[in-house]
Image (cartoon, rainbow, N blue to C red; front, side, top):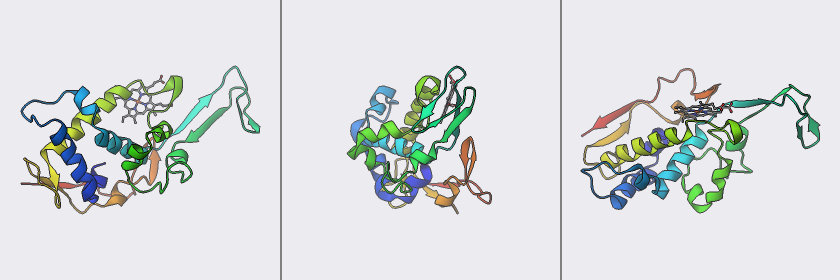
Length: 192
Ligand code: HEM
């Protein structure tokens, strides 16, 4: 999310200004309930999760034959689906490789296709904790800091250092997405 935001100044400007306008009191840490109501930040997080999900989620039906369209699996046969087949499908998300949070503002029902935490009875048990961490961390960072071409935040601004999108894009699947092998990771300089 950080690479996308720092590469796209208009999106960063929006995410930097939204919590300042909605929660102007900067002395106290805003409550998670207030932060979760920020629509643009929510869309930024959902879009970041969409592009940062790998995994082939496997399931086995021990007692029944599972059918999908014309096909049927035998009992005990593992079946699975790689999440990027949905997250990066142009039939579901227009221009799927573009980081564009406003797609979820214009069409909130798209969120039902985001499977980062899986769905159903084996959905991630820590999902709410993970969301809380993302909301608290991102809102606090971008309230305090801005980007190079943006309003500099009260505590400075962030700049990507020898880092581009290829350091964030999934090139390998190790349950979590990994970037290209030669990537040195995501490097940021914090400036005053
Ligand atoms: C962004 C962060 C996270 C992501 C993307 C994530 C993703 C997932 C996914 C996709 C599954 C389902 C795997 C499957 O269906 O085979 C899962 C399961 C699980 N996750 Fe997470 N998770 C995250 C954070 C957490 C945290 C913070 C906790 C706990 C503190 C947690 C605890 C669990 C547990 C216990 C399960 C197993 C649930 C079950 O099988 O019934 N996860 N997670």
